[in-house]
Length: 247
Image 1: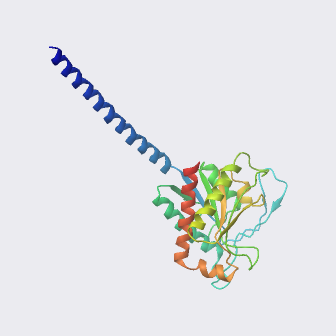
Image 2: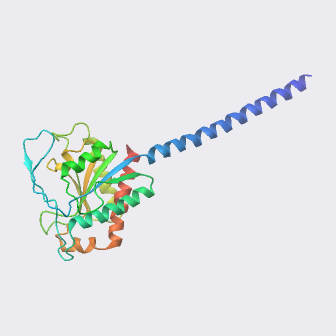
Image 3: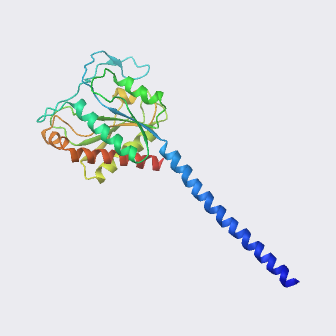
């Protein structure tokens, strides 16, 4: 009788242990599924800088600012290729969009064609209105033909138009720079600035990536290469993915 009770007890314990192990495994799988679903739901808004339509209207440099400026919305032209900046920016933005979608992200572009008429504040407001998790603007020009290389720009800690976003913007900029360098691209120092209208109007974590300078003949030659464009897009996508992993 005692032996029979012992066998029953042992069977009961084994069943309970089995249930615990099965249950634990199920919880782990479901948790991973939830994490993946949540991660994939991140919305990234990409702004291909510039456009084919010139707009000379002044816009406020930031919410509530007294200063109004006119920015060159057509952008630069390739020193050798004569490729318009607005066209190159859109090409790289679309390649970045494709790379991010492969990683499971939702992606929206502020424009899908060159024939648009949007100022910088309106582009940032798209990200604000959509409550995007991240906003990235892509440009490919410099102040003069001597400027070269890739720069990532973000707001400073003293930005008068945004509050509470600096740490995330700086993290994004640093991670983007690092991932571009890992692709053996000439990604230089992060630049903090409060003079860029698109940054000042953006209320979500954001950065500007200047992928090169079309006015510089060496950069222009690189930027014309499709494989080089792919590498840029992959580096930017990797940076965004790494940013979300570190938040």
